[in-house]
Every structure is written in structure tokens, then in C-alpha cells.
Image (cartoon, rainbow, N blue to C red; front, side, top):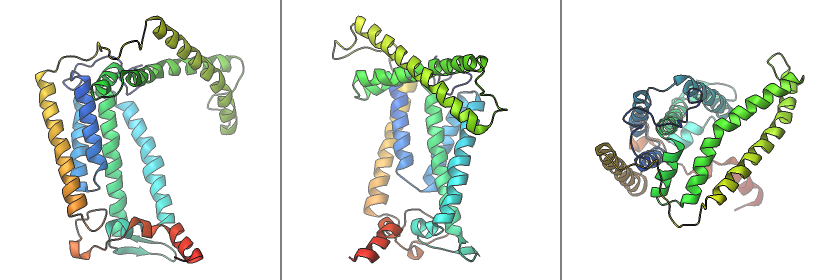
Amino acid sequence: MNNKLVINYTPGPTFLHKLSGFTKVFLFLAMTFAIISTFDVRILIPLLLINVIGIISMKPNYKPIVIMFCITFITVTVIGNIMLFLVSPEAGLNNVGAEHIIWQGSKYYLSKEFLWYIFVIFIKRTASFASVMAFALATTPSEFASGLNKCGLPYKVCTIVSLAYRTIPDIANDYISIRNSMMMRGVELDKNTSLWKRLKNTVLLLVPLIFTAFGKVGNIANAMDLRGYGKKKKRSWYAENYPTTGDKVFRILTAVLLLATVYYVIRYRIIDPWPAKFWCPWLEREEVISIRTMDTLKILNWLKEKFGK
């Protein structure tokens, strides 16, 4: 199952795999905070490269990563940007603060700032995707739970997270078993069947899958009750190791990243922000038009025109 899923259920051999659960969770939270705090491509590209290097260093099975990236790229980036262009071609002006038109049609137009806007959004989403993939590849469910607990989350919630991760392969195996048994009984679920019929038969497949999953949840809950789970205020984690030199170095680097992100937010997002939401390399500060996001919502403008101030 490890070859088919991005999630690892056994510790890996590389340097990142051997870091403690708290170090990985701390680094992931700091990296996520850094990515969501800015739309500046000068910051997002280095963060993206760091996560890509981390993924490559772990020597994973690239097939599921590439499949998920392609699905995300097609559904979110390609289709999403086409819909955005049809609905709001002025998104470049609203977010970048200027507009240099490179193509003009009867109803629509394309500007350099719109292309820059979708490029920055793509880099931001890809950096987030790479961060999640790197964390999932490096962390086992037990390390994730122990790291969350050390960050201050109650251990009962952490155990729920760990169990949720661990049930993924069981649900996948049950799905395959139920699907094969239904196909042996004549239910058409193969590729030669029409899409509508496959969807209708898949609904029938989900019913026994849900009941099987609930049955396993009951068994796990009873086993945990019999072993006295939840009687104490604290618990230990067999997956949490003592911090090594690598852990200490990464925790220092993560703290530096976190402090740098806080400084950036205070300095460049609150005290002296860029006039627009997105920084653009060919625009000077004086050329940028500051536009409030609320002013760009057409529904609000329509309500103002309809009902007055």
C-alpha cells in the first residue's frame, strides 16, 4: 500500500524521515503560515523550491504525486482560470492594481496583469501542494499524532487524527473487495459501461462500504475502552523520539522562518503594505492603483444601485 499512497505507514530511511514528529509538524505549520501570508512571488518561489528539494531527497514513488498534481492542475488551474476569465477578466486590475491590455475582443480582453495574477496563484497553490506532499511523505500517522500532541493539542484529538490516517488503506482494500464481489454478481462497473450506469452502480457500492467502515470503528472503540484509553490526562507516544542534532537544527531554522514571516506580515502587510494585493515586477509603486476587494464584488454594487446607500 505504501507504493500506491503518498502517506507512509513505516518510517523511511532518509534524513527527513528520521526527524521527530514534533519537528515535522512544527516545520509544516511554519511553512504553511509562510505560504498563506503572502502573494509575493519572490517569496513563494524559494518556498516552493525548498519543498520540491525535500520531496526529491526522500526518493518517493512519483506516480501518485504526479497523478494528484495533474488532477489538481486540470481541475483547479486550467478550468478555474478559464471560468475566471469568462466571469472576471478584470481580476488583474483588481489584484495587481494596473492593466496593460494585450488582446481586446468584443466582450472580453486579456491583460498582462491578468496573466501575472494566474501565474502567482499557480505558484502559491503549487507551493502549498508541495508542502503537503513533503509532510505526508516524511511523517507517519503516529508521528503526526505525537507531534500535534506536543504542539498542545489534546491527545484524544491526536489519536482520532492518527486513526483516520490508518484506516485509509483498510477502506481502500474494502472498496476493492466489495467492488470485485459486486462485479462477480453481475453488477457492471468496468470501463466499458456507460458513465451514468457506473455512477449509479457506484452508489450501490458505497452502502456496504460505509457499513463496513462503521463496523470497524465500533470494534476499535470497544478495544480502546477495554484497554482503559482516556483514563489519564496525559499519555506517551512510542513514535516520538528524543530530539537529535538534526531536530535541533531544523527547529532553529523553523523558528527563524516563523519569526521572518511574522516580521514580513507586520512590516509589509500592515505598516507599509504594497498598494495592491500582488507585487508585480514591471510596475512601480506610483503606477499601482489601490483597489478594495469589497468594491470589486458586483453583487454589492448591484445592491447599492438597487437599494441606495
